[in-house]
Image (tube, rainbow, N blue to C red; front, side):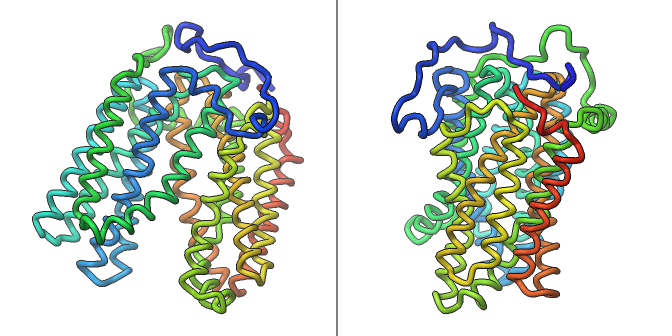
Length: 434
């Protein structure tokens, strides 16, 4: 590992002091690693995530529901998803460059305010009975643009709030909250729509974002570190970020690991067909719900047990092992004729995905310099969002050609073989440790 790939702990004056670590005994050795929560600044950032993780899912359910109610067409729901994806990708890359040139706290305040205003506009169009798909798609595009600007700054800030040896634990805490939101948010939305109505879901999201703004307001200033050259956040800086990735193999490999796992091994596009054909005897609706819920539930379980892995120092091996475990679990899912066994395999895959996510995030924060962290997180956001969508196309096509179970099992085996081959051919990732 060369000097540019070594871990970079935050300066002492930018990290809140914490009590000396004490050995964890008994069941606490296995429970969630909460060391970062002893640092007030990180605790504020994390607490804001708790609120928005559920609140954002209320809007994520309300928008497609409203579009379907207006049009009666699932195709329009799909077009709306595309309308949100494009600005999110563009502004995530640009937002990463901006996050490397300005006070990240100020950027978080501006972008969270923009998301909150957009949620209020969603509510206003709903209560007014406008029933315009065009307006909904424009608002969705604006909201996702603000999210793209916000996400790199939020993720890059973590390395300024906790030391390097707590980055994995901090990522586990944040990822667990987000995965919990993916499970609890839609369930809460489904329960609330018949009671309070769809428009009020948007309003609840806006109120939740006000709590987020207060938490972010109380963060310390996060300007570029002393000695960092002042730059414009333009195309040249975005290109420089990609050039930086190409020169640092461990960063490039961390992105490739996620692309391999998600593109070859995310089978969600085949869940409806599997529920209707392979697991129809269990009830199509029950099967579909369990298939979609299993991976997030497994990820939450992995987060709750983060004490089992968060102190590992060989981050590269943890990523390699997690991706291989993901591929093996997906292969097992594809070969399962029993719904309950299939759910178990998907849950195991969710645990592996959590471990991979935690250590890939830790590598990006520790191996990159502070002046590049925003751009690295921008690319990370694009990879995380784009990979599963490419997987939808690949698995949908393979499922139609070879059958859904064959496509799933083949994809899982491809993940295992490709990840192991990459680890053997390029040693930078397996050698990386903090």
